[in-house]
Length: 396
Image (cartoon, rainbow, N blue to C red):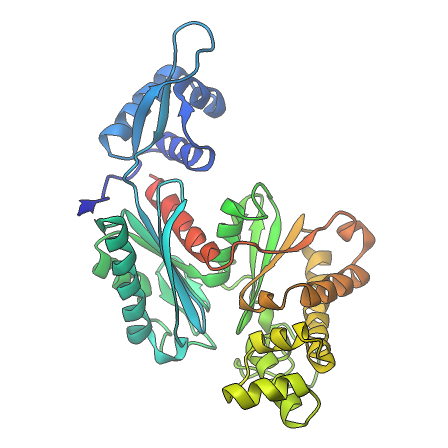
């Protein structure tokens, strides 16, 4: 078994070098000097130090640009990060290399309401499986996402509405102790936004919103390339914006929240009511067969041409679009990416969200605004979590 433990970057220049190699791939010392606007001597000295720290390696001569040939530099090939992306009803765990390419992943259904001891035990079991598979016993670091507000600096969950028993639980330190490496903890939507920025449709986008529609609804906010967390770490908690004065009671205790109308749990509730009332033959048949309905079942019924299921999706999309229109007018993003479990509902939902958002926003703000579905699936959370810990390990 290999250790993948190395030192951390010692200064800002080393951190910038590592970020370039992570995001761009192997580069020559000459290219690195050009990009960072420093001398080749500085680059050579810092690369030498990164090689000693076990973070970088020299991989042979670069293509000649005339004169002396420069050396190609790459990240050390044995760097391994773990990404743990925990949602309300399931989790994805994976291992990446230093450039955040996913080497292997596992997905498992689990219920966040079972509490931190049970859920983290499952996560750590999956981590050990994936580490065994890639032949590493200790990774260089791990990133964790959980479906609720997080105090990023203390590494704890803070009064999460759908996570009973997690309030104040030291998730970061507990995972760090078990894995013997540095860990960062963030909210699951922030993790997905960062994954999308690194490897998804938002690659290269500087200002975008990532909207996760799962059991709950949240929004990751990226401003000028950086994640915006807000003062207390709960920026983007759009599931609790009120969309109607009256309406179902939300998990947070208020009524009329977006989440109470359009989250996965709300969709399952409304689908069950439609099936029992005889309004939807397709949903009634699925309910008969399974004993309960999920948001994904509504998608199944839509694909069977069930009118009531289409209506449920449209209602859900209308409320989401209503909130997004307000966000677009306020934030003026360059892109909105929609992800999360409910995107299995795909284009019916997307069409409604787009239609309402475009109709209700100012033409200037939506003139060139793409609203698209994420294509990363379960890997998005793993990549995002790995990227967050890479930023910490590669930073001084």
